[in-house]
Image 1 (tube, helix red, strand yellow):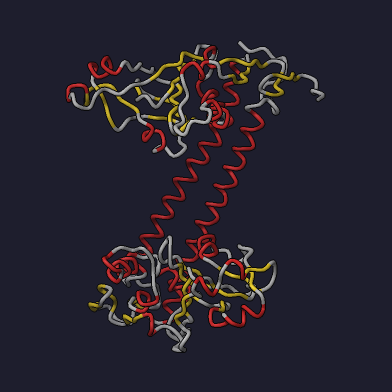
Image 2: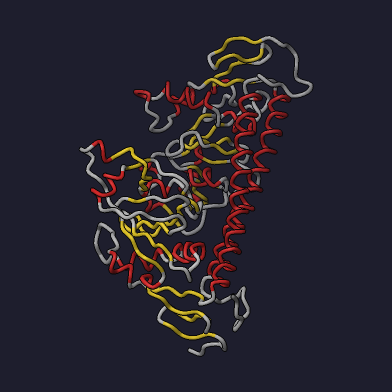
Length: 441
């Protein structure tokens, strides 16, 4: 294979001429951790932070480890033969969970589930962090075919990575990726804040504690089976908000009526809870024939139907939109045909997200264990119901908040994709941030 000018073929792939392939033993000092015996109290709760994999996974992708859940004493450090890791080293899991990384901000030690790298002076720890986060597949390959994955110190010492010789280029790469991480962090915090605001708005609006302009018929409250609600609201059971037809509360067909062998390549669609989780009725490729559809016509889904997941994330719901493919629901869905003069479907989707519903489901479930829903449980649920115009107004406010959250989440996902692309380009040298042949002091 021809290599473009300024690049060279190496054992780890094509890299710039100014880069080199190094063993990790030549990148930094590799140190192990250990665990004191738990039967000796004086070995614990001392002044030495002691890191476990839970501390790393709890970061959820954040780069810096600032504290640990547990500590050991100086005697515990000596007993375990663990090694102290100075600040700005690379902490990396090497047992069971492989290749999860962080940079420690304070001196600490770890348990035996880590191999940690104290970088030499010519290696930037931020660059090393990003580099090693891309090496999980290669690191797992070191573990062989064992059912219990673990990397030995010798194996890790001989593991090879491509590193720019110029530390200025290392720092430039790390800075570019760190900027994207900063943006991701801001987006995550903003999303969390918006979610909290929506939860607060739901608590206020869906219980009538806060009324929207134009909906103050009465100021008092009344007690109901769902708690205090405004005097001009009603507490209605699910059977009172559906159309009243015999199939207005309908669960999908039993498995024997919808076996795998009944599925065909094209025809009438079979919808499942995956459509509700993704809020996308276009998802899925399960189909049944026309004759099978006619047999199961009672389980048809039409635009405007209110759909509820029966298993998994209990109570996940969706209103079937206009333009969906003709089809039926499977046994994991329950359908409500609502009475529009009584209940607004969009309003009901927000009510189903509240603790008011979850508490009732738990109370109505056998033994108080929420293993799934049933039509009996759904029929027993009570709902706080204002006038239809007020329902619609509340739904608009909460749906607008949902749309804002969805836009932020889409921006975050796009930014994460951008980061992955940048890592692929920058950490392999395909794209250079420092001109080829440049010299930096």
